[in-house]
Image (cartoon, rainbow, N blue to C red; front, side):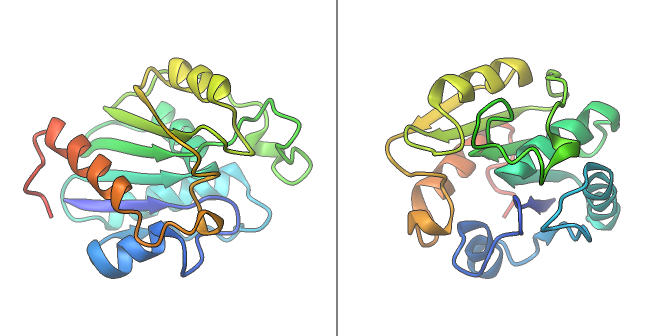
Length: 185
């Protein structure tokens, strides 16, 4: 099995839990490589996801953060679910919020909400500046995925100072166990 990491806007820096996980815990993970990190284009990100899945050995579990949650939801709506075992989604921004930079993310601004075609889990923080808990619940409902709320972790990114984010590792392990993949890494 291969973990495919899909960061958010501008990618995940070296202090971000996604980077730490791939460096310290999931060394065989693949990170998508779109050419539009700073001015995201949905078609470019979708093509990068397709390339990463093609390069993956065996089944795939996605680990997404922020804008990456919207990218994978869109990609899954048009992709065959074969080989895709699930997606672990963390801190999606609310595209309806005034904090969503529509001018910088026009191709992500008005995506339809479609139930995900694979098992998934959405993790959100009670004080995320880019997504209220009510908005996270709306996204979870639209994607037909369970929502776990964590207290006061901000956007669950580098600024949250989570290090390797042990709590997130436990959540991912529990999610994988629910998929029958407890011994997959």
